[in-house]
Length: 294
Image (cartoon, rainbow, N blue to C red; front, side, top):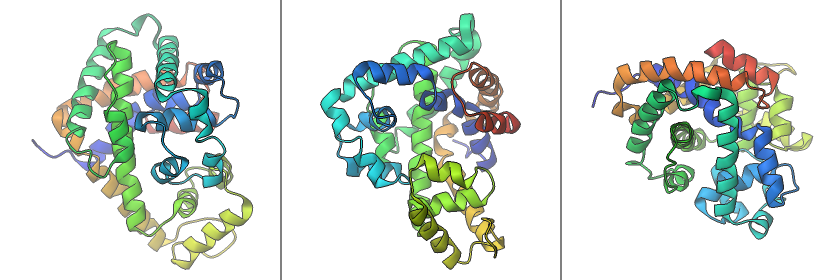
């Protein structure tokens, strides 16, 4: 099979990512997890994304999710498994996906474009399943049965492709010697996401965040001054990690080639736009950035 250009890999992944990513914001998800008996606002996220690996210890989730404060994970795991089984949690998540995508795509939820995108994404995801080694979070998701309806197939395929790429990215961050909070500091220093948003969402306190900043600064990756900005060295190292993430993430898309990737980009960008516009809880700034990238 012909290798896929790294730029294509990034575009095809980003084009479809809102189709998966909405599950972390949609009110249907919060309602589904509340119906199970979850009360902690983060329990649904950590339990549902970990559930494909089974009722794992908090340490497994800390290891695979990489950049969250361990105290936050310990606050919800393993308690979540005493409230609902992984199977119940996954069923609730898939129901929330179904409701969300039906709201976004309406009468076209089983239309030709959704079916075509699902077929292309599934072919890529199934090729990814040939290389689970070193990708534990992907491996858990790859063990799940495929849904039958096209919109759910598309969502599950993008979930697999996301975790395949994510596990590779974590390995590359480790190779750079970055810990979880330092990786977030580097991300913040690109200017793509405000530092406060990354610190808050991953639950690092001010002292821990400051320690992360100093760790990155000690590597010589930051410009002088109180603001977080990557210098030339930092930009180069960040670019190298992102490029290699695209390289490692290209393997699944070889199943559909550049032509299939171009078609998947074309369809998924339209479908993702409808997901973003469907009032499913995407933060306004995140939605704006995704529209700009489309």
